[in-house]
Amino acid sequence: MDEAINWRVADVDDAGAIRALTRAAYARWVPVIGREPKPMGADYEAAVRNHRFDLLYVDAVLTGLIETVDQRDRLLIVNVAVAPDAQGRGLGSVLMARAEANAQALGRKRIWLYTNKRFAQNVRLYLKLGYQIDREEDVGGGTTRVDMSKPLA
Image (cartoon, helix red, strand yellow):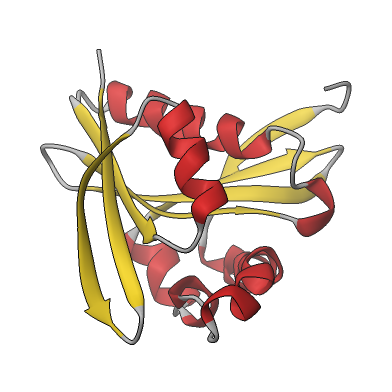
């Protein structure tokens, strides 16, 4: 990747940009599951106050983000979003590596996430990155939640 990548931790002024990027990134899943995925309707003003958002800029343009919550014994990845025109370039893996580095800096031994089983491409990526499927749960409405985690060194 030849572009200049920079990081910044979000503040409340970034909520609108986070919402716009997330809605654009997740729009491709609407036809797959027949509704908007949960991150598309989140309250990002509250989320930015309560969660950590690492914003990824490529050539000074907000291109990706990863939202995490420290749960004392492990770090939860709540949201991973990459701008549609940048998907397929490995930025999802870059964002996941950022979350893992943050978890290790906090002294956490495990990182975890949950996703929709129908987001098969995402599940494959997480497996490739060393995550394991811990459990699957039918949460109704034709949705199966997949909990995945990865131990950290």
